[in-house]
Structure formats: C-alpha cells, structure tokens
Length: 555
Image 1 (cartoon, rainbow, N blue to C red):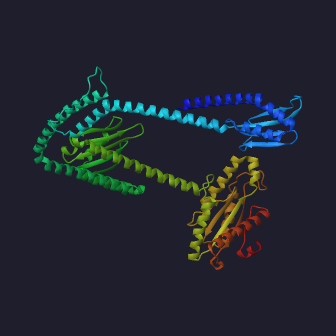
Image 2: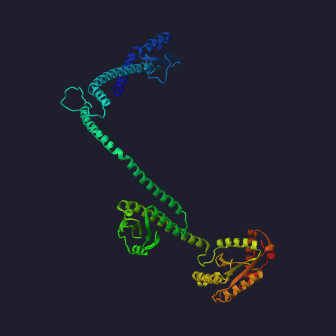
Image 3: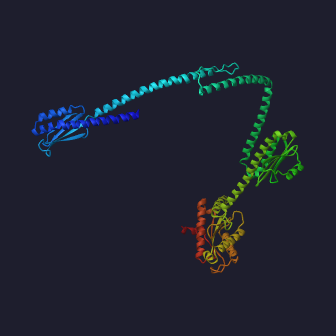
C-alpha cells in the first residue's frame, strides 16, 4: 500500500507539472500579447479584465502584475511564499523595452487534493482486497484447523482416569498426507492407552495401599523415632558449637573432653578419642583402658581424604589424611551394633564435626599467640627490647594513679648518650645500634623493682620511671647508672672521655605538689628535660636534678 501510494503521488505530481507547463505555454502564446497591448496603451480596465480571465483558470491560485510605471495589481487568493513562475512583459514594438512582470502562483491545493483522493481510493481498494483474502483464509483455517481443535478440546474435557475412556474420533476429509492435526490425533490415541494403563496401575496401587495400611502406624512411629534421634543429634552439635565458639585456649581442653562425653553418651559409645598427627589431643572413656589407647597410637589411617576403618568389631577409626595433617577420631561402641555399617555415615559426620572443632581450637591458639606477639610488638622498641614511648606513657599514668592513692613520690630520669651523632659518624650506624643495645641491657638489669620501667623515647634518648623514690634517691640512682655506663668501657673516639657516657636529668613529684595526672606527667617531663639540657650545657657526663620550684621559669 505504501509503495503504491508513493508511486501514485509521483505520477500525479508529474502530471500536474506537465499541465502547469502546458498552461504557461498557452498563456505565453495567447494572453501575454494581449497584456503587452493593454500595458502599451495604458488601458487599465482591459488589463484587469484580461488578468481576471487568467486567474479564473483552475490551475491558477493568484496573480501579481508589477509594471515599470509602479502600477501593481493583485488578483486571486493571498499568495503564500514566492511565486511559482514569473512572465516578463515587453513592448510590442521593441522587445528590449520591459513593460512589467507577471508573477503566477499555481493552485497547489488542487494537486494535494488529487493526491489525497488517489491515496484514499487505493487504501479502500487494498482494504477490501485484504478483507476478502482474510475471509477466504479464515474459512479455510476454520474448516481444516478450527473444527478439529474444537473436537480435540471437547474430547479433552471428557477424559477421566478410567479404563472405558472413549477414543478420539475426528471427522476430516480424505488426504494423501499427514499434518499436525493428524499428529495430535495420534498423540491422543497414545494418551488413551496411557490412561488405561494408569487406571490399571491406580487400582493396583489402591490394593497395595490397603495391604500396607495396617502397618502404617508402626512405620510412622519408627520414622518419628529416627527423626527425633537425628534432631537431638543436630541440636547437640549446634549447641556445643556455639558454646565452644568464644572460649579461650586454656578453656578448650576441658570443654572438648566434655563434648566427647556428651557425644559418646548420645551415640551409645563407651570410649572415644581424638588423635592429631599421632598425638592424643583429648579423650573420654567410661572406664580406663590404657591398652585400647596404646592400640590407637600405633594404628595408621593411610587413605588420603576422609575414610572409615574398622579396628575391631567394636571400634571404628574415622580419619582424615592430607600432606599437612593426619587426624583420627576413634569411636568404640558399647556393642558391635552401635558401630554397625548403618551407623558409619553418622559417625563419619561426627568425626568431621570434631575435626572442625579441633581446627577452631588450633585457630584460637594461633590467634591468641598472634595477639600476644602483636601486643608485645606494639609496646616494645625493636632495637633495644625496652618499652617504647607509648607503653611508657601508659605505664606512667598507671603508676601515678597508684602513687596518688598510696601517697608516695615518683621520680623520672631522662638520659641521653653523649656525642652520639659523632659516634654514628665514626663507627657507623650498626655499631651505634650495638652501643644503644648495650646501654639498654645495662639499664634493664639495674631497674627491676616493681613499678620501675626503662623506655627508649628517642634515637639515643632514654627514660626511667622510679616510683617510691624522692629526688635525692633518684639522683643517687642516676649517678650510679652514669658510673656503670662509664665502666662499660665502650670506646668512643669522638668523646672527650674516650668512652661512651651519658647525661642525666632528674625530676620528682610528691603528694604535696598536688595536680591531676596530665599536669603531673607534663610537669615531670618538662622538668626532667630541663635538667637533661642543663647537664649537656654544663659539659655532659653528669647528673642534674631539679626540684619543682625550678619549673617556674620553664615554659
């Protein structure tokens, strides 16, 4: 329809254009000479009558005459857009003399109306043709498909699962071929045979059910008992797993032994044990039998992966073997029926569950060891093994709280290795690290009283917390420490003494000074730093102790 419509539009447009060209030739031959005469004689009325005759033509919509003298005449419908064509009007005596021009607007609505009428006519013709074709097709399809399908639907509605179900009978014309309806008909014949066979089986099943009806209560009771047993087993596993999930490693041995006892009593076992790489991890026995345990340690499970091995008529070994691990769950029943072949799958599941608990136990051990190691690393200086600044500050807060409650003084020593930059430059950083380690080891050996702590708080700077010592006692400890380091005889070519020495600053807090913990820590640290600075400025290798009153000038 679309192609026909497009072709029709093209043909009508071409025909209208040819008519318009013929009209122009006719106007040029007949009307233009008359217009030339009327313009040359300046006969306005004759000119208008002539233009009126032209505009009355069917293909002309409007005219506009424009003369050289300025006269303009418009006739017809108001023009839309530019003129379709323009005719020049020249003098009848001299063709070179222009008298005016005639602008012509053709009736394009006529062409559109012709195109629209033609398309409507084609649409109606095609629609009638299509409806006729559809009616023929519908008649044919209804005869060959609709009626047979309706018969099949009625037949399906009458089907019942019984022996005397009717056969499908379709009334169709004789043909030399088979189509889909014939295939469906054959399928329903097969269905008919299947329904008959099903009806026979149904009757046989009813008879079988009638025979088994008397034993149904017994079977239900047996199944209910079995399901109850399995449900209790699952509750035991889930409840125990939740209890063991958050235990610490020291709680696991007793908890695992209790787990084995509970599991063994539920599974009617009188002994069970867990072995990991030939080592007995935990066990439970109703009565001691060391001979049985010795036999387990010498028994081997060689098959890789999970396996079940019978050690004797009452003992099963559920084992898991891999390149990294050899696990065995030994289960001994009270009777041979408790570890029969029917219960091997249940016991293997219990072994897998116990293996997962054992893995979690090992994971807890590794996790707590890692936590301890991380705690130690976070609180220890890696070079000297002393406490780091963070640990020292935490310990300082705890000791000051205790000193405030008990009413005893707390002293702080700040010491610095003299000329340490020169030591590193002369001997190298490796020897510098060895020097700091030697000084740290000496201080660790000297300060071992409860509450005392030595820490490395900087590159070559150390701090010592001395709870219970006043300023004089702290000064004596500092002088003894400086002398002990001097007596180490660690060579120092860049020092005026030729050996490693330290400068020490001392400060002290006592109860009468008062203040909160943060103020006390700040006061002790600033006063000790001031004393250390004074010791360095005074020539190093000496001890300076400052009392709290001296802090007034330190900001």
